[in-house]
Every structure is written in C-alpha cells, then in structure tokens.
Length: 362
Image 1 (cartoon, rainbow, N blue to C red):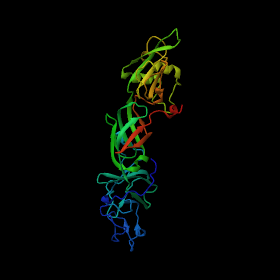
Image 2: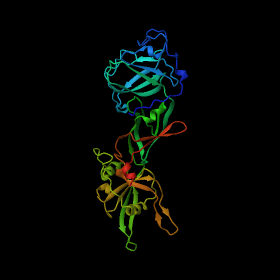
Image 3: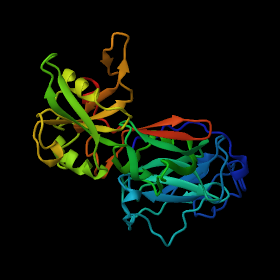
Image 4: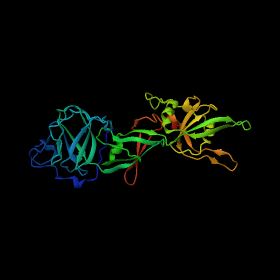
C-alpha cells in the first residue's frame, strides 16, 4: 500500500465529542499517557511506547475513535481471518477526551491503521514501528469523506459473472451485483490512492464463429459464414487461445492478427458487440475449431460496430478487435489491482483494465 499523504481534511465537528484544546488537567489521560506540563502544551506530554493522537482537520482531538490494525497484504475478499497476535486485545484502542490512544503492539512492523467512530471510517493510514518499546507518538487526522459506490465495468467489455471489490489491507470487501453495481459506503476520499482490487470471473457477451466455407473463383475472395455458438464454449476458446493459469499477463502468447483475413471473416457476422468473441476459422469447409480444427484465431471486440455498406457496395469494418489472448485468464477467476476510479455525481464507477497493455500498444 502506498503511504498516504497527510493533508488537512474538512473539520468533522459533529464527530468531535469532547473536542478541546490541547491540555487537560495535568494528570494522566484516560489512556495512561501522562501530561506533565504546567502550561498545558504538547511539550509536557510523556509518551510511553507506541501511542497516537486522533484529531480532526483543524487539529482538535476526537474522542471515541476506535483503532483497527491490519497487515498491508491482508485480502478481505479471501474469506480468511486477519492475523492474530498483532496487538494486545485485552487493552482498549479507543481515543480519550484528549484524542490519545495507546497502541498495544505485540510485534514491530508496518501496518494499515483504521480509525472508526459511529460506524464511519475517519481515516486509513500507515503505522510503521521498528521497536515497540521505544516511545513513538503518531498523529492521525480525520479525512474528507466521499461515497464509493457505482458500476463496475471491464475494459474488454465482457460481463462480470461474479465479483468482489475490496481494499487490500482493510476489512472492506463487497460483492458486485448482477448489474455490475457495488457499494463500499462512505470512506475517506483518499481511498482512491490505496490498493483497490477486483476479484472476478467474466465471460463474453456473446460467442460467434466465422468459418471459411470456400474461395470465390471469380473474385478470388474468401467467403465466410458466421454463426452463434453455445456460451459454454468459452472454456474451449480459452484453450484454443493458449491460456495458461501459470503464465503472467506480460508473457501471454498473443498471435499477431492477419488483419485482412480477420476483417473479411467479420463481414459475415451481423453484429459485433463490445465484449463479444468471434472465433475466426480459416481452414476451409469441415469441422470448426470448437471440435478440433487448428487453423483458428479467437478475437474479442473492444469497440463495437456494424459492417458498413458504402455507395460502391464495398463493406467495411470499424470494430476494434484484438486476440482473445489479450484478456488474461478470460473465463477464469482472476484478481486485478489495475483499476481506475471514475468520479460520478453520486460516487465512483470502476474501470478494470483487464486487457493486456502490450496488446493495446500494437
């Protein structure tokens, strides 16, 4: 997780229960952090061990904020429990009236720390501690808030069959509904700089097959027919495309398209919708690639179009297609942190970049 830049946030006056200027009574605070000063200045605070002070955007203490600690690599979508033994759970991690809270770490390390009050997350931040016995004061500020809900879509245009949106190193993970919607709720606005991930399985919006039937003797042009094929052919298409779960995105075997051949084949298809897969079979009459023919190239439509008829009668294709192998692990469950948050009027939509960048640069 990237270190968040601490900026002054909007004052959360409604959350500042017991907020007051730094000082107090000159005695121990509720968390055992001693104020030994006579003039009630920060210089007089005696820090013992790892501790924190929670303040709002104006630097005023916030009472009643509960701190939660996570390992940076924790995946809330995994279904596994967060690691234990990070803190002494017998001790409270709630800020007192001066905003102080002791962090009873059991082990040193780098952690993600969350501040929660009234069911609302005020901040996510990084806590890095080398020695748990050395006095280490930290200040955590409440952040400006934003709504993180909207629609999820894949750059490939394929549909999301199942999915989770999550924030690594936190407890936040939500399912994506059948319409592609998600709702993480109201969170600090700088969550967008954290490791937002998407675990999902996807499938083409449709699967078609363009098969070479013959070559016209008069024009010497290839003639194709296009037909729909069962959607359960996706797995077989993945095999044809050369997918391998052990192969990384950058090492994906991508066959260079014969543009002339592919465009001619696509002319035979009535519709070319975004996210659809067309398996181009150029082996002549006979069994299609779905039943074993080797001369086939599955392509996916990234930009939809219809075949266009010109005045001269020549048909053209404006669709943007790339090899199906450019979508790593298509048809299989995968996880991507290559996501882009797109602000909307009510929240943020998410674009998952599930197409290999090397293909888009070609």
